[in-house]
Amino acid sequence: MRDNQPMIASKLGLSPCAVSVLGQLFVEGPTSDDNIMSKAGRCDLVSAGLAFHEAGLSSLTPDGVRLAREWDLCSLYARRDRRWYLKVRTNTRPGGAAVSHSASGAAVR
Image 1: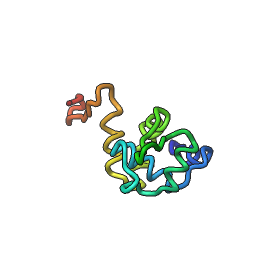
Image 2: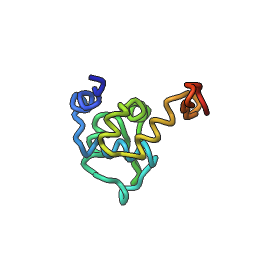
Image 3: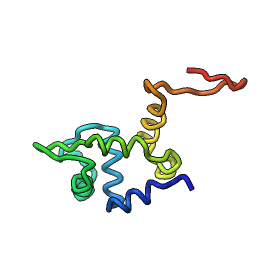
């Protein structure tokens, strides 16, 4: 089974709230305390070394960005997290170029 992120999340001790905040910070970037989805989820990410909280702003660490970027697309689609799904999908190719395929099978940018 390709969906190993829930296993990674459980090994890191991430709650469902932390996973939601991971997606929020990945999509929105630095986020103020007033706009964070879950302060408890943010604390889980900070404890795991995936985010930091300073001066009322929360942001992902490089490890947090890496985890969010490598999250399985099928899992994101199942979560119905469209913004996270689209950001990961468009950034899977170097340079962020999205590639689709024509009817003949040729790559089209």
